[in-house]
Image 1 (cartoon, rainbow, N blue to C red):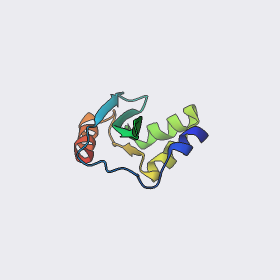
Image 2 (image 1 turned 30 degrees about the vertical axis):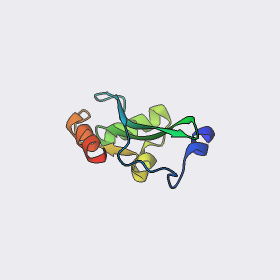
Image 3 (image 1 turned 90 degrees about the horizontal axis):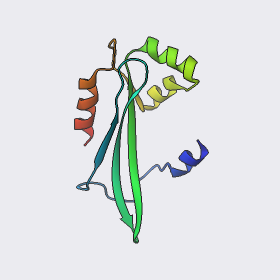
Length: 105
């Protein structure tokens, strides 16, 4: 986690509008998280760099609490920080995932 934290920035030093973006999905139904990532390749003085935004989805609060205990991951904190969405459905609502992608492209 320390290495990931070193990559985190408060403000991007690059303009990201009108750039190529690759969208990756890690789909699930009800046990695992569904996650989506936006990857923006950047060339900085001839060095390839990547800006990555990720967001995850889980079906409901019961599943969140269950996975928090089993995985020992603070999913509730991720929700509070805006990194995770609860779809309030029996399985992850793929329509909500796609709406998130469309809204954030």
